[in-house]
Image (cartoon, rainbow, N blue to C red):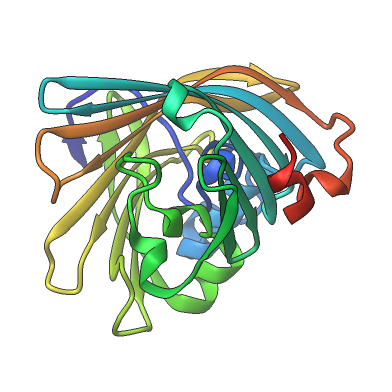
Amino acid sequence: MKTINGRTRGFAPTSRSFAFLAAIFTAAAGIFPAENSTAFDILEKIDKNMVYTTAYAEIDMVITIKNRVITKQMTSYARGNEKSLIEFHSPPRDKGTKILKIADIVKIYYPSAERVLRLSGHMLRQSMMGSDFSYEDMTERAKKMREEYDGAVKEDEIIDGIPCYVLVLTSKLPKQTYFTRKIWVDKKRFLGLKEELYAGSGKLLKVLTVEDIRVFKNRNYPTKVTMVDKLRGDTGTVMTIKKIDFDIPIPDEMFSERELLKK
């Protein structure tokens, strides 16, 4: 086994919105014998912790670009891994901006322009609200990853004394944004600890880590996610959950274009 220095962190790389947060993490009990587990068996165990009907969260997003620090506050509503609605409340220039995700579809409402923009194709690779996350990161789901990647379980490693599986996913599609994904997963709790995202050339593009794991309704859940875009330089984005509630009543109308336009 190898040892990696650093603080204990956790995450599962299967989705990112409050889907960034709410569709990513787990500590599910094992179902498959460890020695026979495939990479996707392990990812499925990670997903099991995120089986919920609905979720509501209040989130701070802090973006650091060189010496400049920008803090954005938002609320998020989610229904499973398929639907989410994020609304920004600060800073003033972003107040009222909303992002709707339904499966692979992302729509943004800009109150200053009073219009809805649907993102597709290369537009999804743009920075989300100036952060190190892209809109494409929001659309990632376990099923999609299984369809688009081949997976392998590599040599075990240890992070802060925690034995981890090391998973390597390689894209089946030549033009995939993240051609290779390297994922460290806690072998005992089946909670991801780190993910590295690579281009087809082998260049490291992004690093995602999570910390501050807390227990909510018998599930381990990370409340702090950090994304670093290696291409931007001297930058990093930290998303921190200030409040989170699972399985609360959220009408399906919340995930509609009509809701996007509501002031």
